[in-house]
Image (cartoon, rainbow over all chains, first blue to last red; front, side, top):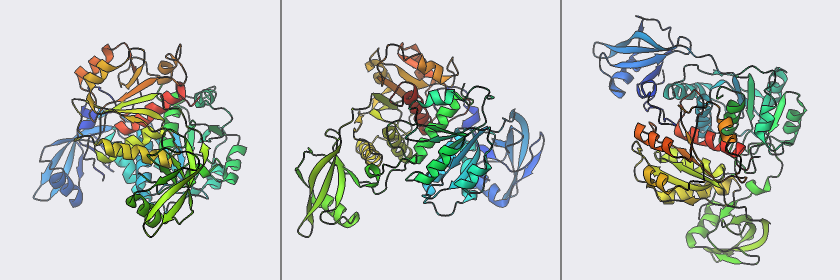
Amino acid sequence: MEICLHAGLRYDGAMAVHDFCAQRLFLDAPLHPGGEVALTRDQANYLRNVLRLADGDQLLVFNGNDGEWSARLACKGKRDAALLIGDRTRSQTPPGQLAYLFAPLKRARLDYMVQKAVEMGVGRLAPVVTRRTVAERVNLDRMRANAVEAAEQCGILSLPEIDTPQRLEQAIAAWSLDVPLVFCDENAATADPITVLSGLREGMTSPARIGVLIGPEGGFDPAERELLLRQPFVVPISLGPRIMRADTAAVAALALVNAVLGDWR
Amino acid sequence: MEICLHAGLRYDGAMAVHDFCAQRLFLDAPLHPGGEVALTRDQANYLRNVLRLADGDQLLVFNGNDGEWSARLACKGKRDAALLIGDRTRSQTPPGQLAYLFAPLKRARLDYMVQKAVEMGVGRLAPVVTRRTVAERVNLDRMRANAVEAAEQCGILSLPEIDTPQRLEQAIAAWSLDVPLVFCDENAATADPITVLSGLREGMTSPARIGVLIGPEGGFDPAERELLLRQPFVVPISLGPRIMRADTAAVAALALVNAVLGDWR
């Protein structure tokens, strides 16, 4: 169980604070009114001694399926505890339609990238191994922990699926033809990414099923880039005249896709 | 002098690698062909013993004014060195038109936010202190070091100005009426940020002189929000249904502004 110690950083002055200032907890357990979720000793210790929650203290819990619920800590003896589930505070949100394919970066940047992708509403995290991928083995548990942390801090109720890593060639071969896969290409024919993305709107549901692909340090190698550009579903977009780190490009590309084709409209 | 140890993380498969794989160095000195820049002992030590550059090794240097130049290390004796300036490899780019106003975050996130803002081409970094600003004193030297590092890693030639921190009220009072100040407001009247930003295009130069304002952890307080919304130049945009950390919202908002009004077109 991941627990956030910090409230999410709001990007605005909105007044409704309960949903991120309260302690939000991901619980891998079914949630229903009046339910009781027993905590492991580690979990109980964390809530009682790290977060210093006392018997009866309130928090918010979610499991990725049943929405968000208020819950109270029920201490049992010196070291055990359970959570008593109260009312549903928010109903479950649908899973994100956005698939995010990315070459894993090294540790801290990968943590960051995963957290950001979750904040951007990504529904599927798909690590792809490319020729220039520098990261050591991909730690999927760590990716999941980062996804949970971001969801807890940012009031997100739907956790992304996390794929096992596959090679870029496999990911391309397995891609469904009717779903655009946006990739950031400095040499894209059209400079303006808004124009390119708007051109995809026709006949698409909203929010659209779409993928965003971000390359590794050093970018895709020429053969990989050609492979991508040969695919009918691949949509190259430019992200301007400056070089960006991959994790910056990720947030930028996901923001444009959300704004033009996603749930920011 | 800041020196980057890592190549920038490319966001694409573009082939031109020289400008970010080569060691890029910010030098606070005038640059002209045939010039020689003496290095301090610390700088010489860094290049010779940390980066392990040998006499005659090539690197790229820039000073924020004179473009980018090739240079060679000239070792002098056991511990000193100079840089011999060769040809200009790129001419100076104009300063960014984008002003980025932000409530300083705590250390690591502020470092990150400054680096990202530079990658997004921000020409001015303006820390604003709000009622909910949690950061301790703002370390402007550290901000500058982060800006230089991002510029070195991402092939950026124009370093942003860095303002001394001011209160939000001062920043608003000093703002020029003809420059839009975009701020991210969950309760913005229009959901679609692209529509709102496109509406600003008329009569604006491109890239546009524009500001982006990002609030602190916990957001602006109600009085601050009202102050902002009262200003004729303030443009509230929504960044979708999810809560975002401030540093995520920063990259997202700067990406939208760059794409609709900036130099990504």
